[in-house]
Amino acid sequence: MEFLDFFQVFGYLFVILASVYAMIASAQVNSTFKKYSNQISRRRLTGAQAAERVLFANGVTNVRIARTQGHLTDHFNPKDNTIYLSDSVYDSPSTAAIGVAAHEAGHAVQHAVGYVPIKIRSAIVPVTNIGSRLSMPLIMIGLLLEIYAQNFKYGYEIALLGVFCYSLCVIFQLVTLPTEFNASHRAVEALEDGMILDDDELKGAKKTLRAAAMTYVAALAVSLMQFLRLLAMVAGGRRRE
Image 1 (cartoon, rainbow, N blue to C red):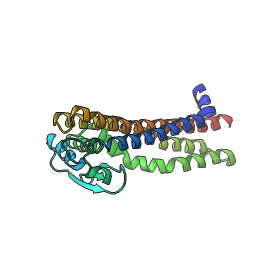
Image 2: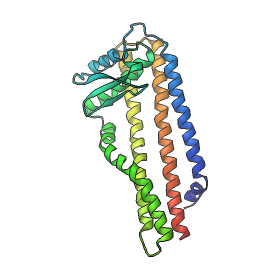
Image 3: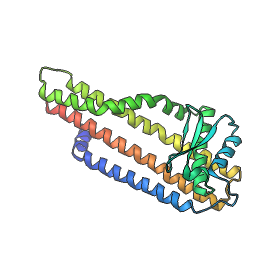
């Protein structure tokens, strides 16, 4: 239990540090995307056209590509089998836009070939959403029962159930990492093999994707630190009893 004692004392600090890292990673994505949005590819393919080529190169023909509003709101929706590209990506011939579009096409390819991590991530999304909503209420209710309802024997168990619910967020973030890195790998491979970008242009796409990947590392760090803090808090409350 010494490790939990340590986290009970410094847990908030670690969560704050992880959150600061997440903010830095997010800012880095925006600055990198902005920088390479000014690097126009020689072939002048748009993000949408690049995504089409990546899909075609992988034999995927049943995925639609559509525009969505917002900045860097790009995503692949497996429910309607559609790649949604933001305004700053869809029509842009920049190396940053092409890299992002190819990454989302990589997710579509993952679904088409049955890539295991993305199937796991899709399967646990509903459970994760429920767990994230229930975790904090369960923890607070459990701890309050432990303190104020001496005749109720299951306050600790309720709080621990809340911690378990939050652990689903950690699992989701953990499964997300290989999914995102693999999608970027597929994207870079397709851009290179399909000669969509030249070598010097490919560097811009890679840096954009690398910066985006760090946001997922940061998200995992935040959720993991929060999980350990909550676990230490609940375990510490039980020992005081």
